[in-house]
Every structure is written in C-alpha cells, then in structure tokens.
Length: 135
Length: 78
Image (cartoon, each protein chain N blue to C red):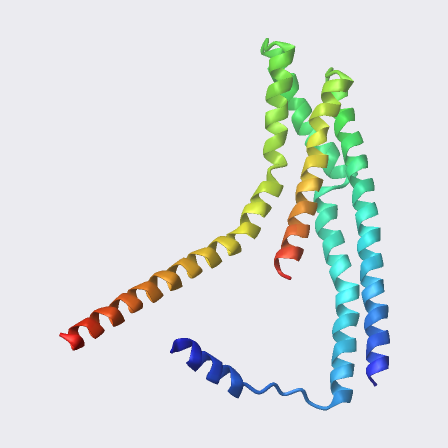
C-alpha cells in the first residue's frame, strides 16, 4: 500500500530542465569548477600531511622520544618498539577517516533494519485484525 | 548542441583525470621525501637505518589507507 503511494508520488514529480542552452552552459560551468578546484583542494589537504617539513617535524618528535627512552636506560629493542607505537598514533588518521567514511553505511543498515521491523509489525497487526473480523 | 556538450564533458573529465593522476604521482613523491626526512632525524639520534626505515613505513601505510578510503567512498557512492 505504502509502496503504491510512493509510486504515485514518484510519478507526479516533475523535473524542470530549463532550456537546452542554459543546461549546457550550467554543465560547462560545473565541470570547469570541478576539474579545477577538486584537485587543488585535495593537493592542499595532502600537502599538510605529506611534506618534507611534516616528515622532519614528526621525525624530530619521534627522535626526541627515542632519545629520552635510551637515556632512561631502556633496551634498544624496547625503545624502537615504543617509538614505533608512538609514531603509529600520529598515523592512525587513516583509521579515523575509514571509520568516519564507514559511518554512513552503518546508519543505512540501521535504517533498513528499522523499516523491516516496522513492516513486520504492520503485517502482524493486519493478520490480527483479519482474524478478529473472521471471528 | 548534444555533441558540443559531450565534447566539453570529455575534455573536462580528461582534465580532471589527468590532474588526479598528477596528484597521485606527486603524493608518492611527497611521501618519499617525508619518509627520508623522518628517517634522517631518527638516524641522527642513533637509531639504526633498518629500524628507522621500518618505522617510517607508517607513512606509506597512511598513504595506502587514505587511497583505500578514497577508492572505497568512490565505489560505494556508485
């Protein structure tokens, strides 16, 4: 029933396209901006993470950490292992990005689950009503 | 009109793909230089080159992770 309504609703949607010339101009403008701005934006974001200066700064921090451990009398192997863990904290950025990117998929799954449960409940209710009518 | 639109779309799409390819090459180069600078700092403090190289591999892991995320979001949105 709900689906039928949705179909009817969908059939009444009208898309205003405007004149052909305007569309072409608009598309041209959009493509022009996308092809120029998107690579620049990505380049700027990546430069802040991957650059010689960023590597040097991170290296200085890790080296200072390693030096402190060595001076405190930590064995070489343990100091290297701890420095590796220390650096991996900086680079866990990709994991955060993955999690944030995967968040949308999870919310979709939850939405599907909710709609499935609602449909089940409605079906149960309809069956109950029919049985009552028959009685 | 349609041909003109198709041609323009093709040109802009090609430009975008070329820019992304250049970006990928540039990213690889930047990761390499960042790793070198990072290793240099660690070696300066007395760490062996082998260990420094192993630790600096985190940069490559980060790059791969970012690329995977980008690819994943691209294919999921299709």
